[in-house]
Amino acid sequence: MSGGPAIVAVDVTRTYQLDGVSVAALRGVSLTVPDGDYLSIVGTSGSGKSTLMHLLGGLDRPTGGTLMIGGRDVATLSPAEMARLRNETIGFVFQSFHLLARTTARDNVALPLVYRGMGRRERRARAAEMLDRVGLAHRLDHRPNQMSGGEQQRVAIARALVTAPSVLLADEPTGNLDSTTGQSVLALLESLNAEGVAIVLVTHDREVAARAGRQIVMRDGLIVDPAPGTGDGDG
Ligand SMILES: Nc1ncnc2c1ncn2[C@@H]1O[C@H](COP(=O)(O)OP(=O)(O)OP(=O)(O)O)[C@@H](O)[C@H]1O
Ligand SMILES: [Mg+2]
Image (cartoon, rainbow, N blue to C red):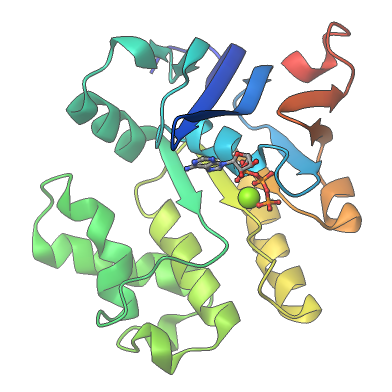
C-alpha cells in the first residue's frame, strides 16, 4: 500500500443514464478518508449516499473527477485490477446483507478468500475465527434463513472483515435491526475502528451518526456540511 490516505475523491461526479435521461447522482464531491478514520454520512433519501459508497468501495466508477483507492487512480485500472484492489483494501456491508441464501454462515464468510486462491482448510479456519469474533461461533453451519436479522448482519460484517481490509464501508448497517441489536453491531464496528480499521458509515439515524469521529451531510449530490472549501470535508 501507498502510505497515503486510504481513499481520496476529488470533485467526483456520477451521472446515470436512464432511458435517455441523465440523472446527476453526484455533482462534485471531494472527500478524503485517512487510515483509521471514523466517518458518518447522513442526508435525505436520494441525496447520493449509496452512489458515493459504491464509488469509495470501487464497486462503480466516477463519470468525472479523480478517485484514488489505496493510492491507485481507479481510472487507470482494468476491471480485474479493480476487483483485486477491492478484495485487498475494502470491506463492504450492505443494508440488506447480500448473503448467499443456500450457503452456511461459514462458507459465506470464507467466500472472499476463494478469490485470493487460499486453500479450503485455511479459508474455513479463518471464517470460523471471524465468526467467533462477531459472536457467532455457535452458528457456523446455519444458513441465512436460519438466523435472525442481527445475526445475518454480523455474518455480513465477518465476511467484510475476513480479508483484513483497511477500510470498512457500511451502508445503513443498522437500518434493518432493532435498536438493541443495532447498538451491538455499532459497538462491534467501533471496536474494529479502535484497532485501526477506517469506518465509513451511512445512516439516517442522527444519534448513530453523532458517534462517529466526524460527520458529513449530503444533499442533492453534494456535500453541504461541512461547507465545501472549508477543508473539513477533505479529511
Ligand atoms: N442505477 C441508477 N440509475 C439511475 N438513477 C439512479 C441509479 N441509482 C441511483 N439513482 C439515482 O441517483 C440518486 C442518488 O441515489 P442514491 O441511491 O445514491 O441515494 P441515497 O442517498 O443512498 O438514498 P437512500 O437514503 O434512499 O438510500 C437518486 O436520485 C436515485 O434515484
Ligand atoms: Mg442509499
